[in-house]
Image (tube, rainbow over all chains, first blue to last red; front, side, top):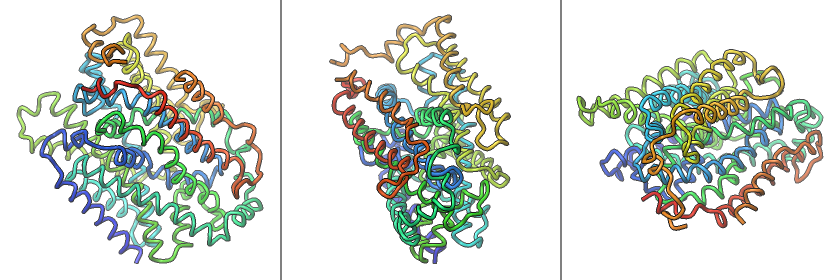
Length: 492
Length: 66
């Protein structure tokens, strides 16, 4: 029954993707940014759904199983504050520039902002490399969910393959419009079913008071932050949500907004949506000890799915599993579309390969690139036994450390391409260095001080950007004029 | 008003670091206080965004986009 419900849900998602294709206007801009016609509701659903990944559902519950209630403040509440601020301060301005200049990708934006072709190419390589661990957690999350909910009948490698395949199908067919509609459906599904899962499972445990009472006897250290989370670690975690300002898939969703005001309700409601998703994930992760007290290391990734399997009756279990898959797929789809778009726009079209290719061939090679990246990610998922939360933190670290480049592009006229180059290279070098230092140490911090690598990297990339910019030649005045409109010009 | 709101944003960031509840396991509204505090924090963050949208919205963005 569970498998039947999950199968039905996957077919439903494919149908939504296919139906949205009927709205396709036959232009590149419609395929890549839905002709910039997305209103507040769909924008909220797609921005939020895209940001809520296997990280927020399986990763958060697994991390809460190991580190307790503090995980909510560590990433959930921090994201509820930082991400809307990023959208407010940077997202709206980037949207205005994107609409004016017709940008579809970040490489286009930065290339034109700093008059540098090589900068766009460097950024393309770095962004694609950083998206891989993010894709990885989606593939792993899909595999874990299908495996657990079918009691091992569907092996994890088949689960990952099925989820990757379904996402690839509806993204290739429906473009960004299909992705936005599928995201809206999936975001509603996982928000509603998350609340249902919380209600049913906590009810089976005798209610919140009873369940936390048992936890106080079993693992009292998980009901406080105590020694489990270091205050310095807590402080530096707040740098991670800055990554939302540099995710390629979020940039693409910003570009879809119909008007600036389309951002307003998404900004206000974003923190409340975080509550709806993160509180059940973290509480159920902690309470997982009441039912399973022997999940070690990455096995904790599956605590939520195990709880659903144990406490929810047949049909409901299938629905709740579909909710988890909805969260996984609503992010994978945007990431997949973003890297396909980047390859088509930033490589094929920008370097003139399109002169030798028909429109059909360009789309084909864009999809082929996506398949290759997904295949690489899938192979890594077969050998990876890392924590979903930990993998995501490495991916977010790189994106967050690139955020100063975005801020400089939007707010600092004097910033230069050399400064941006230096900042991006510093991020690449430091990321590789810290990754080699810490990838085998769960919860790695710089020198064991509690400081996350992301904090060091944000500071270093900012300093490099500033220092190199002030000693190099500023961009041409006409470029600055094209990107910085004076208050008089916009009638303030 | 705009600057007052920006200052409030800084204050909200500081309030995220609630060292005062770090080791407190008191139950409030059925949850440990460290969790309840951050749930309320999210609601306040939403209110903060409402005020920013209402009183500090960057005017002219739609004109700038054309």
